[in-house]
Image (cartoon, rainbow, N blue to C red; front, side, top):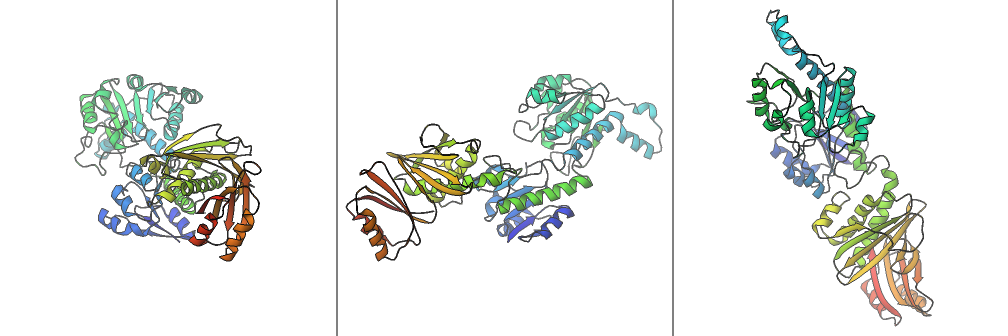
Amino acid sequence: MYKILISDKLGQAGLDRLEEAADATYDMKTGLSKDELLTIIPEYDALIIRSGTKADADVLAAGTNLKVVGRAGIGVDNIDIQAATTRGIIVMNTPTANSVATAEQTMALMLAASRNTAQAYASMQAGEWNRSQLTGVELYQKTLGIIGFGRIGRLVAARAQAFGMDVIAYDPYVSEEVGRELDVILVDLDDLLAQSDYITLHTALVPETENIINAETISQMKDGVIILNVARGKMIDEQALADALQSGKVKAAGIDVYRQEPPLDNPLLGLPNVVHTPHLGASTVEAQRAVATQIVDQVLDALRGVDFRHALNMPFQAGPGFTAIRPYMTLAEKLGQLHAQLADGRIQQVEIEIQGDDVDDLVKPIAAGVLKGILKETTDAPVNTINAPVLAEEMGIATSQTKGISSIDYHNLVICRVQWAGGSRLLAGVLIGGSEPRLVQVDDYRLEARPEGCILMMQNQDVPGVIGQVGTILSAYKVNIGEWRMGRDKPGGEALSFLNLDSHPPQEVVTALEKITAVTQVKLVSL
């Protein structure tokens, strides 16, 4: 039974989803202090938060059973993603749930700042009629500059174009072709600052975007520009913006988010040419319902291992097609485990080759599976596909994709070669029927064996009598052979046997087998 903690307010629709889950229970405890959260978090498999809870390194370290942190919303600046990744904790958000609500709030602030709506309301409430002092400006034929041209930025662009605005955008991760398709010109930041009548922020908060609106960038803007922020407060140097608003360099601003929330001693508060709202970007009935149900569904699917959509720290894309990927990751993990148990030294290099149309795009998940398998056998730290690549790098294990290390011909073949000081080994595997892992190559030996359970691997000279001697010894210790698969380099040469045993034999069995004259090596492995 999965146990989920909800530490910020979540819509009832999401709670209803949790009530329906037969394999999960939840506690909703809002307003927790950090010490209170640290005390109770070890009990839970998942944590669902909004912007109020900070899932920092201390909280993640205390969450010894945590598998998932779900952010009901887009921004994850209140989650230490690096610490979560190191601990193998999935971090996910809901990037689509409140996109329309945020785009509409942007347009609301744009219109309000342009037409002095808040000032006009206050004037009317005071019994005044100051039409001549409240003349605004139109959006029509003005240039809107969008910083960050992702999902929300594109929704804002479409709405602004409906008002007859010309739209330009800055986003180093979006191609000009995407812009052309949406009738938006992609420009560099300097050009956007110089050309825009309105500037709106819709990018993620990362070190490069913190304080992206500052005294220097404001100086590059047109006189009388209007600035909007419905993204993250830390993207604006609030004092620099306040100075520009007071000097008239910036005509007006629409601000929904703040560096500190609720804002205290904020230089923007009280300025007559700023429209303020209390972080309402996602505050619609529709968005609250969507964000609650989406994050609950995502967290439950992740806990069940069914789907990892919108996971931010997976080493590969894991959306709706994860069900097809998972069997290959299981195969890769088996290869990694086998490598770790057979290696004669600390593994330093991992090379992976993929053959076949079905697996051609699965290098990253397969690599994660191989590394997980290796590390499960070589470290006491908790390991999963989230943190395996990070831990491997920290341990000095280099991983690369290669070609031509195997000459065998199988449909959808996964090949992995590892190296250690003074040696290397190649293993290759396939899926039978799309789900059953099979080992088909060990170095130069070809065979077809099940990589599961207790396995006796034996190398011997290919001479008569070996099979009988091995069977006799195992029988004497009442160890039954489930399957015996063998490959050899040539008749009368060297043979490699792969025996699936029904029980784990005592060490005396290995000792007895090693005394057979034709046997050159014996190893017991467990998968």
